[in-house]
Length: 104
Image (cartoon, rainbow, N blue to C red; front, side):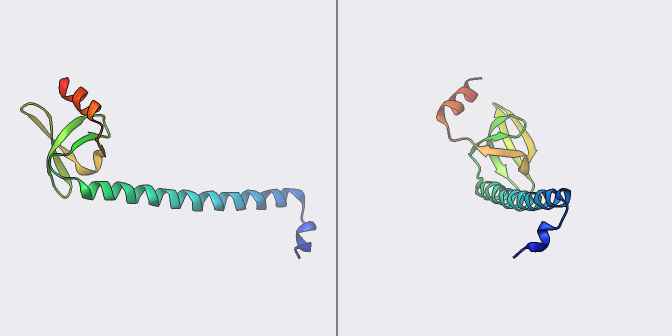
């Protein structure tokens, strides 16, 4: 079937095999990236005031308001900051983490 492949030098066969693996890696990476992106966008769209969140810089706080590009975050009593909405890493649901963050 692929008799012409047998007449190629070994280094070209090696390059072809590497090319196949590279293309497979790029396809896998793209699919994985799109899945992660979809999960992050879903989480971003479900954010609501009152959610306890963790930012990418490691700040814990309670969302006060969520705009199209920014969010107001209460990080301590009488201390609010404005952050970029897309710097929110995750919504915290673990009660132990919430209690520990509130105790500090």
